[in-house]
Image (tube, rainbow, N blue to C red; front, side, top):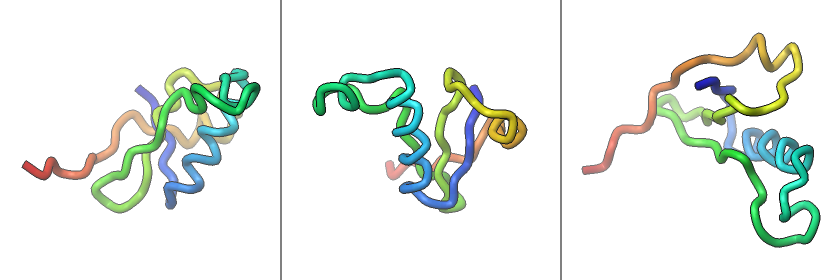
Length: 76
């Protein structure tokens, strides 16, 4: 899997929104239904990882991808 790491949840959601619009998900066409292909996950260091494995990335984004992140610990 490929991830982009963002400093804030909002920035990661903005990128997820961009992809959802480009795909033409129902939320963006009809105002209801699927909005995102993937949703960001908070990481152990307080950043946000967005799974962009199936996204249409530009060259800058491709150069910034990572193949892992450290998730938050389970709260069990």
